[in-house]
Image (cartoon, rainbow, N blue to C red; front, side, top):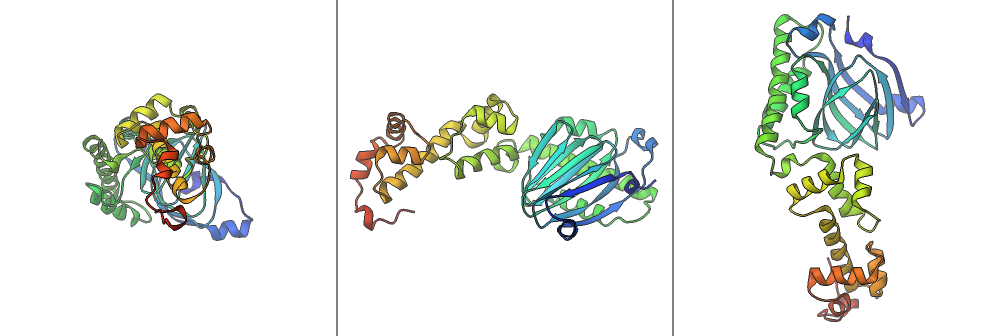
Length: 306
C-alpha cells in the first residue's frame, strides 16, 4: 500500500480552516510500504518533502511508528510524540524516533525538509547521534547532505529496485556523514547541540529574568550537570559565569548612559542583591559600580555607548 494511506487524523489548530489551508504548504511524495521491508537490511523511504508554515500553528497526525529525519531551514519546530517533546531550530538536523501519533508545532514562520524512514540500520544511527545536530550549509561534508537530499526529493511514483537501493545508500551516506561530523568536530561551533544554542540565546536576550540551573533543567528536560558540562565544553565557561558576564556588560551600559542608582542597575540586569551585584561587578572589572561610573571619561549626557 502507499504510505499516504497510513496517515490519518490530521488536525490543524491555531487558525480557522481557511487560514490553515493557506498556511500549510506540503510538497510531499509517498511510496509503497510493506511490513516485510523492515527486515531486509535496507533503509526505506515512506514519504518525504518540504513543509512550510507562514504562521504559528500545530498539527497532529497518526502514522506507523518509524523514524523521522528532518532539517530545519527556517524557524523553530517543536515535535511531540508520546511523552517525548523536543524543539529544533534553524540549521538543525535530527533523526527522531516517533510513535504512532505525532504533533508538530511552529512558532511563527517555519520551513523544513522531512522524511519518514524505517529499517534495521536506523537503530544504530539513532543510538550514536545526539538528539539534534547544528549543521550549517557550510559545515564540513555538507555537500553530501544537500546533494543526496536533492536526489531523494526528485523521486516520484513507483520506485524501481534500483531506486530502493539508491535511497538506502543515500540515507546511509547522509547519516554516516553526520556521525563523522559529530566525531571529528566535537570542539567546533558547528556541532553545538541546538538546546545549548537556545540556552545561550536565552541568556543573551533575557539575562534580566530570574534564571538558575534548576530553571534550565526544567525548561530543557536535561540534567543541570549535563548542561554545565556541555556548555563549558562548547563555550569555554560555565552557564552561570556566562550569564553573569552578560549581566555585568548590561550593567556597564546602564551605569554610563543613565542616572540609575547602583541598586536600580543591579535590579534591572537581574541581580536583586546589591552586595552580590557589587561583588560580581568588582570581580569582573576590578572596581565597584560607583567608581566605574565616576571614572567615565565623558559626561553621561554626552556619551554614546554601543
